[in-house]
Image 1: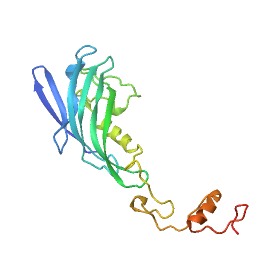
Image 2: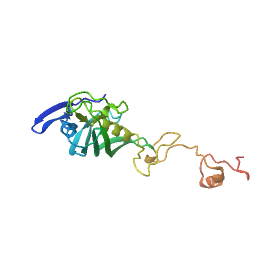
Image 3: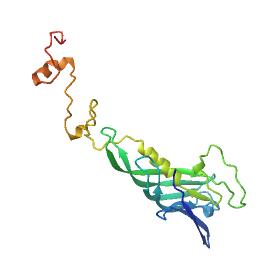
Length: 215
């Protein structure tokens, strides 16, 4: 369960601005775009964002700090949000299963739609195919928390290695081969290389017939 944010509303001469405050850090994750909705197509705003995400996965329960910048552009349907945010995730090496801290960049490109007409205050019909996290609330607040959370979850599913030459785990005993050879003695060798195995003194290699079979 992701932790809810507090909503703070400020009154300014050029309109009402409200934004969400993370309950731990007091930083912005959501923005009110009422004034932008009243402007013509193509009108824009640029804002910094920062805050915390929670419960991304078992290794990133939070708070997971995200920072970045976004641009808001008025579209016929609502507001297009583009930009990027950065975060540091704890991932797992797919070869040796050791934890890896990795900085990631979350590329943002989503179109949010209003649920209330900014002029009349009447409810709007929202296309049922629009995801709920992309629908502004009745105060015309555009909240990026869920979108960023989804992007972060997607990053945790990307394959990652602790290093390029990671040797991984022994498929038999599970030992971390980066720490040195394991104690497995049953070494399987391609029959075509069995003679070489005998010369090298590898265990499990008996004398071979000319047909390449153990005597």
